[in-house]
Amino acid sequence: MEYRIALLKGDGIGPEITDSAVQVLEQTADRFGHRFVFTPYLIGGAAIDAVGEPLPDETVQGCLNSDSVLLGAVGGPKWDGLPGDQRPEKALLGIRAALGLYTNLRPAKLFPALKGASPLRDDLTAQGFDILIVRELTGGIYFGDRGYREGKYGEEAFDTECYSVMEIERIGKAAFEAAMPRNRRLVSVDKANVLETSRLWRSTMHRLAADYPEVQYSDLFVDNAAMQLVRDPRQFDVIVTSNMFGDILSDEASQLTGSIGMLASASLGDTTRGLYEPIHGSAPDIAGKDLANPVAAILSGAMMLRYAFGLSAEADAIEQAVDTVLERGCRTADLVGDSGIRPLSCTEMTAEVVRCIASQ
Ligand code: IPM
Ligand code: MG
Image (tube, rainbow, N blue to C red; front, side):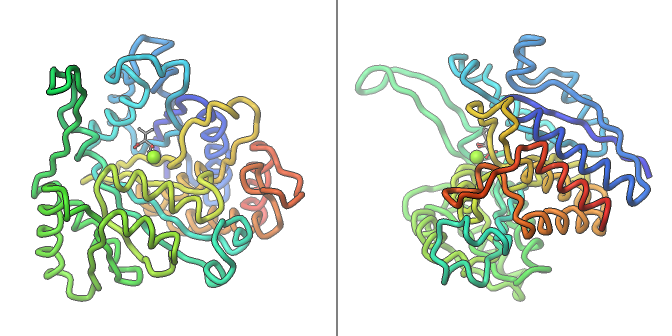
């Protein structure tokens, strides 16, 4: 079968890691007899430099006309001085909204080979952990009214958080559904002791919970959730939370797996066309040096095969190959710490995964 994939490489390490994901996907296509057709489109700082805006119409149209979208990362110091609505990050929010991708799945799973790379104590990593963070992606404070105004103390800036019952219900349903084939435990994270949006979030989640008696449901305040994650991540199965809390907790959870360079994500809406991207940023400090960890991008490719195309054997093959190369001791610089292991470059790590898929 042929699948059309829009490729948004973006900035910093974005081009390197998406190239890695493409190589791995092509090897997988070869092995399983598929054809993936990649069409690159501009996004972020690269788009600002080329055509003067972070999210050109052509990019949005190209994504809408594709079966799926694979994205690297956007942003960098070069564009940091631009006004908020012209920054590269605005393109990321724009494409998520334009494609209606309100559900962001961020799996934080500890690969057995990486136990030593986790900052947690050995007794906490011994049995591993496997958490799925379900982050609301097209609402909340990321998309609320913002601006500047004259306030009590002179000039002030403001951002607002707004959530409708509809938005909470649809992300809540996605989270309960995601919990069903897993361990059926769902924790909803909010700040209902302070925020009105969180109180609506909580009451709406409670109503939904009644429809899913098989799922063991509970609530946590976000500060407690951040603490519980490092205290013992094994207590979590699925976490559902708002856009900003999910942004923060997923970075925290990623480090528990050894490195933020390991975490993939799938952004989904009501169609099968999703957007797949690592949760990490563009890492301008290591861009162009062949030092980046390509695993998050590679695993994002695997999630794309699973969720967008229903190719689970192919997705398993990629995940298995990552597991195997890690077991063999392959590590990029972010994963070696002070172990004395010689780190592999992004190119070398990618080649290991590709070779592994070819020989599986
Ligand atoms: C992420 C990133 C983005 C976000 C930034 C780059 C806008 O941190 O995908 O987690 O906050 O959503
Ligand atoms: Mg983030």
